[in-house]
Length: 386
Image (tube, rainbow, N blue to C red):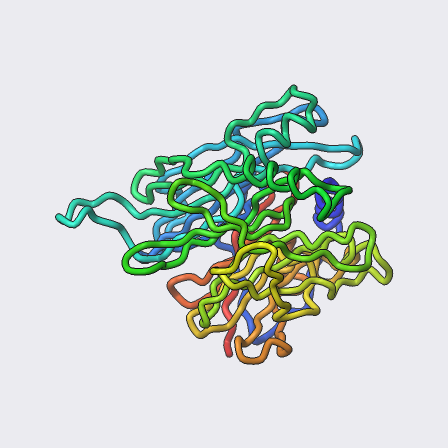
């Protein structure tokens, strides 16, 4: 992940103007954000954005610059902001550190909840934090203890009050330790990154988490237990062979569609021009070791994904175009019935995109500068004419 920050800095320095696609309008919505990753909307059109934060002094440490903020429809000023811990690490003093903190966001979009008597409780949404407490302790030699790492949080949309509902990271760190033979060079490891809340039976909900370190898709049960649904297989080529699932979206058929980063294979295995990421179709009712199936291929470093209201799959591709793109990154739209038909938008105009969500106006909203240093990130509105 340090390489991500290195390339991010390069992308910022070499970012230039690209020829505009007349079929798409790309406009800034927010600026000055610190590594924004997750984005979601509730049923009243409010937008929520997570920021992983900014690095502190030294090669490794923790700050309190992570946050989740709510923006009411049409506003660029937060209605509230809730702070979280942020971890940073750098192995190369000449490169900016990688920052990890609040990551994926998800909401059902049902508006504000009540207690059945009309009393407003506030819109509920979920956020997943990076890494795991035992993993950070191990890597830092016990010098950094982040009790928030790897936790799933429920936030009250009216107030921003946060409640931890599951320690996903510690559970996946343990699971990978127990299954070290699956990936012996990397396990134990955990880095929860993507979250999805869906409607369950009756009036209930189901919550799923994609762990980019453990390569697992888990369902988080009501008591906080993580049930491993699937393990996304690694490639059989490349330097690291690490699929790295980063996002989950629910398709029109009720199955889960999981995007993968495949960072090293995309960028550092010749020719290094990408096209080696996949979207996996996962049965939400399966149990490990049921193997998911490939639904779409040929994508590059997927970091966020969603389905729009017309049933199209959308993904943010952080390094689309390769390391020499100016700057790297775009979004891709895939019709559900024709996964080999892929239309890309925003090349040269979306720097290092992270999360993606459809807004109440039908446009797609994308966090950018998601792995860029400092407060150089933001949110862009991507409106396609057809």
